[in-house]
Each structure stands twice: as structure tokens, then as C-alpha cells.
Amino acid sequence: MTTLLLDPPVKSLAEGSTEICYAVLTVEGMPRAARPAVEALMVEHLRSPAPAAQPGTDPLDASWCTRWHRDGPRTVRCRQLLAAPGTELGSFAGALAGLAQAEGFAACVAESSAAG
Image 1 (tube, rainbow, N blue to C red):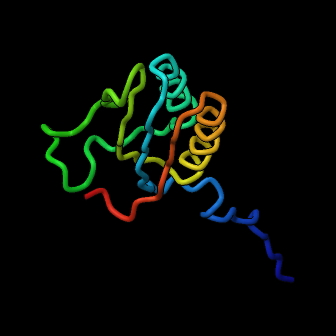
Image 2 (spheres, rainbow, N blue to C red; image 1 turned 45 degrees about the vertical axis):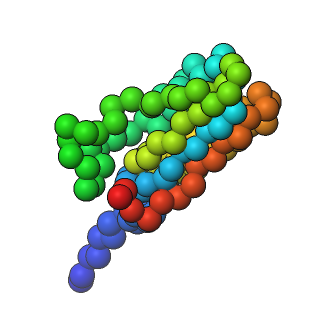
């Protein structure tokens, strides 16, 4: 008599994938007072550790924080490359879109094919 033991089913690798994806965060015309809220969303939704430096970037030139620039009277803007699993980027993009609509500024998280 032969006994066959079945292993438990293997979960799909796509579920909960930790493959790093790249996206460009663009914010324009944001009231300065909303900056902490955007950064809090980044902490909440982009939980995976980012690579030490983006591919093709000299580690000494890497951006270690979000660089905000004046955009107009009492507003700021930024453009930053993000690296995180796709699920985290999607979650962040949705939350950011809601904040942008509520606060009246333009924000976009656009998929990027490469870091360079």
C-alpha cells in the first residue's frame, strides 16, 4: 500500500510580493501646512525599507529625504523617485490622491520603468 502525503498548497508569489517597483512622486501647489500629512502618509504606506541608493545613483549623491521647494505663495512642490513594493506604492497613491483632493493641490505617483 502506498501512502501519499500532500504538502499544503503554495501561495502565489504575486500575493504579497516584495518585488521593488519604482515610481515618481510629483506634488505641486501644496499648502506648506499639508507637508507633514504627506510625509506621514509616506511613513504609513511605504513601510518596506528602501534600497540604500537607487540603481545608477552614486550613494554619496543619493536623496535621503524628500526635498521640498517653493512653488508659489505659501505652497511647495517636490519630485522624488520612490522604491517600494507595488502594493505599497498603490496604497500610498490612493491615500495621497484623497489628501490632494481635500487640500486642493496636485499630486501624482506615476510608475517608472527605471531609476535613471
